[in-house]
Length: 154
Image (cartoon, rainbow, N blue to C red; front, side):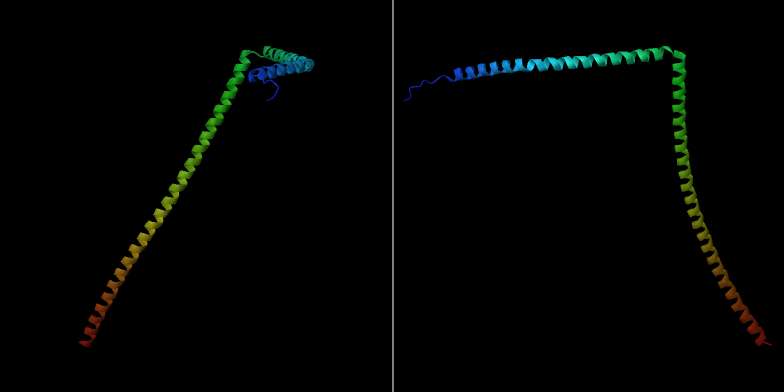
């Protein structure tokens, strides 16, 4: 057996923790100066931004003092009128396009129906012409018989 004594594990863990805390405090004191300088730089930037924003706010206030509420209301009404007119114009343009498309479809349908009707009329006339032609041929044939009979009887 060894002559060395074994230390409890909790004691070893506690010693490691104390050494870690001590090292952290030591490093913190070394980095404390850089943290302070960084904090001072950040604070100066924040003050510069605040000055810039205050100047900007003051400029906006002076600009607003020069304008009357009536001017703002008139300007707002004018912008609203322009938007309403633009919306109305777009809606009317869309209606015109839809109407044009509908009329074009209607015209195409009417033209197709007209062609169908003309074809039906032409077919009917051809039929009638054929019927009449047959009747004329039959009449000519009968007349030929009558004339033959009349010529033969003399």
